[in-house]
Image 1 (cartoon, rainbow, N blue to C red):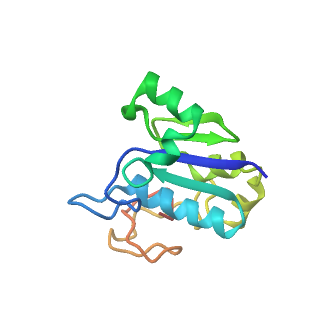
Image 2 (cartoon, rainbow, N blue to C red; image 1 turned 60 degrees about the vertical axis):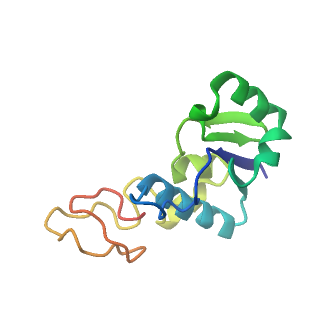
Length: 144
């Protein structure tokens, strides 16, 4: 099974729920990682503030940081091959990197989300069918 390693910039927390503004991409990414881990995927997340040794001991990451610096993070490696930089990959991409695209067929993160498109007439405070968290009206994800 491929080993996926995510190297993130220095963050106060990985979830995206700390600080004055919610970072929805981190919330989504955290949920995606939890889903992959629960399916047995070998995926690890390293935060520059909390785990600098992981950055310093991986030659691929050291070389990347010498060229791009921390503004180029996040860096996503699959078996030490760079597959994404400067953004968090989608759940579908992570599943593909893990060699487990069939997990997307479970309705957890397919292109239309777990529920497909959320109709525009659903109030903005309506809860998502997947997570119980609010989704904006017209959202195309249906999940965090």
